[in-house]
Amino acid sequence: MLEFTQVYKRYSTPQGPLQVLENVSLTLAPGQSLALMGESGSGKSTLLHLAAGLDLPDQGHICLAGQNLASLAESARAKLRREQLGLVFQQFHLIPSLTVIDNLRLQARLAKRDDANWSAHLIERLGLKGLEKRYPEQLSGGQQQRLAIGRALAPRPALLLADEPTGNLDETTADEVLELLLSLVRETQCALMVVTHSPQVAAPLDRCLRLRHGQLASSALL
Image (cartoon, rainbow, N blue to C red; front, top):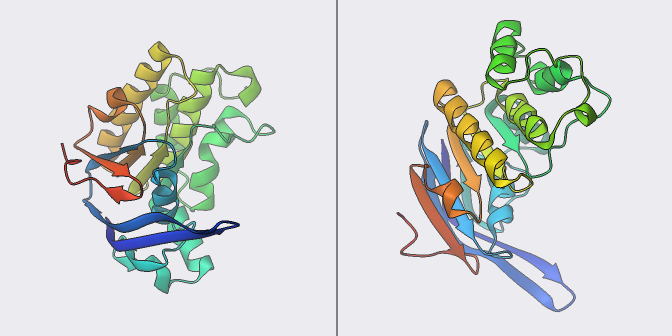
């Protein structure tokens, strides 16, 4: 589903080039879950952006669903994101002017995969039944993150990328949201990559890799 082959990424800074990722190789099979851990500045978010085709590597290859991202035009990468990817962030990124149900179905509509029955099932599973006509500001933080997860899964993506998905939540709510996320991922059978600094978040996933100074540590595979 996702393959990095000897990927390098650097950025220009006033002090000179900054190497963010160096010789990174990894694979993620369909239906498999992977935790990516590391300290702040280790390159985790950069790797996630590359996986989503939001940025391109300086060297190496990244393939998503069998397609080399660097060989695609930006419009084709955007189409691939709509059709194959779900994205969940620490910040919920819900649209304030849309109701719960319209936020939930937004990504599916953009991907032309809107399914009213599936959306109704998600609303039930997310614990948002009866709240469909509310707006994001009328929800708790946990409810907003559950809605963000539902929006990402509404198109039934092949790969879900999550960046610190429980980072803004208290411990109890974070545990509930993580359990729901993993349950829905199993139900949809999509692959999952989670960027996290939390061993508790990483523990239930199939595999765990650790980034240190832009490199995957040799002992990272658990």
